[in-house]
Image 1 (cartoon, protein in one colour):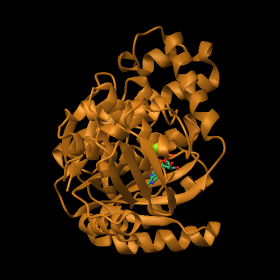
Image 2: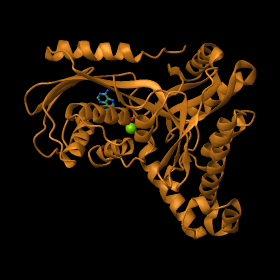
Image 3: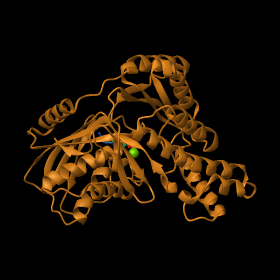
Image 4: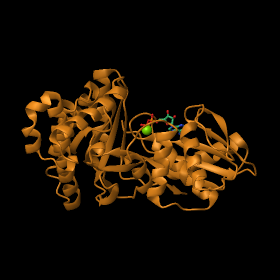
Length: 390
Ligand code: ADP
Ligand code: MG
């Protein structure tokens, strides 16, 4: 069962009509920004590695109108509207979701913009907490709305960094730059290769409409995720320390083997994941650049195995979902599948033939539900469009 993606114009209509019914006004501005999914390059963003995400055709959309005051009144589907004073420094507050917005407002105040009061309503087709970065979509959409309200256009990277700072300082999530870069830089028919050492994004063409990505949300999230992330980061720092090099980018498998005894089994396996995942990601980029996908299934499967066995961030549900895609196989239109995101739950990505997406998703859905009793969310996507005013 493939869930269809609402079009941007339907989402914009929803946001406009909610603005009208909540605050009684018609919008003068509508902003949109996508969620994202990472195709390959997992848990190496904090190791100077590469990530290869794409914006998904799932968006946060905000409709707004200035209100001749110094206050923002903001609603979001299913939540009580909030009021924020725009004339003063933003403090962390309640409800929790308001902090993403407070952080973005503060980013504009730091740049010395005076933000006029406004009413706004937020709608979204990015599932929350599924590892698809609804939080970055919210920040980047809201930052784009504020650009419109103060009549400016920030350089794209600056806007992404402003949104990331909001997530760091106000939501207290120490995220890398992938989510906000993807939500702002997203371009139709392109993947985004981010070099996490230089912080530079590079667009990688993904023009062939006969290929799509199925995102499958396992709808589980295991408690391990908080501590697990910090522990993995620490393990990679320890590994690099033993190898005594500046950056993982300069490390080869020979370096890792040379320190195997000193590392012990766990740090050895963590280190092997980092070095091999960087290599797999570079190979995958070659595949997308040349259009030769003969190797892509092996690379995605290798990434999944490495995350499961060496980095130990997968879980039964992710392994099951990836296994179901693999069972369908090349004849059924599946080119490759792997877990995506931080792990311990969340979503998988399956690269597949567009013509087969319905049949693939139906089979994955049915079999996953049989095995787990959970109804997973599955949708197909091509690269979406980065943050913009509609
Ligand atoms: P993810 O970014 O992977 O979806 P997070 O936990 O980082 O998961 O972010 C989810 C949080 O972002 C939600 O709990 C909520 O606070 C906020 N959020 C995301 N989308 C919206 C929205 N449309 N309206 C209000 N808050 C939202
Ligand atoms: Mg998030």
